[in-house]
Each structure stands twice: as C-alpha cells, then as structure tokens.
Amino acid sequence: MDYGCGVTTTAGYEAYEGAGELLRALSAPIRVAIVTELAGGERCVHELVDKLGAPQPLVSQHLRVLRGAGVVRGARRGREIAYTLVDEHIAHIVADAVSHAREAHVRERGSTAAAHDGGERAIEEKH
View 1 (tube, rainbow, N blue to C red):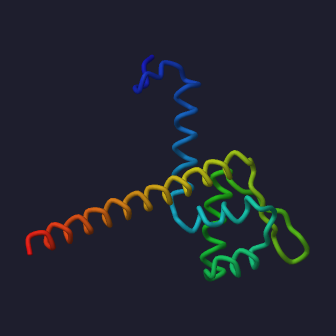
View 2: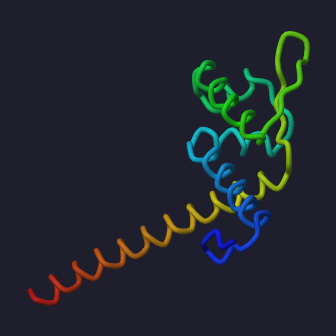
C-alpha cells in the first residue's frame, strides 16, 4: 500500500506519524524552553518555574503535554516531581531547531539591514 510521500510500508508510515506527534508536542515555545532546560539534566518543577519565569500551573500544564507525548518522564523526589528527558535525541532535535531559528533570524536581520543601508545610500547618491 502507498501511504504517500513515497512511504510504502506501515513501519515507514508509523515512523513519520511518530515524528509528527513529537513535533506537535514541541510546537509551543515554552515546551522548547523546557526541553532545553532538561537537556542539562533533571529538574524539579520549581527549578523550571524559576528558570523560565513562567507561572507554576503553566509549566505543569506543558510538562503534562510533554509527558503524554513521551518526551519527558517524572519521578517523585519527596514532595516534588523531578523531570528528565526520555531520550537525548530530543535534546539534539531541539538544539538544532533553536540554532536554525537563530541563524535564520540573523540572516533575516542582516538582509534587512543591508537593504535598508542600500536604500539610504541610493537616497544620498541622488542628493
């Protein structure tokens, strides 16, 4: 059976489906920030709240989404729950995505600045 995009096996389609679910779970900027923090090691909710400057209920809500998607796992540590990434590949995916976004932003700012400077030079040359 052909599932589209050149995928002809159920296993191939399931891999794409799993990747799509992972990317959906990472689609909120705060979740990207949470994963970035967890890439440095285990963190309790209060540590994430302090680092991200976000309200505790919001951080907990996004941790539930990430846990449901199999991105993080929590383990009780006394009165708190400490979270870790399930797989370090996720940290690499997020780090690459953030790096790409930063580079794209720099390129965009550079081309905008160059276009702006070029426009100013053209105006100066006319006068």
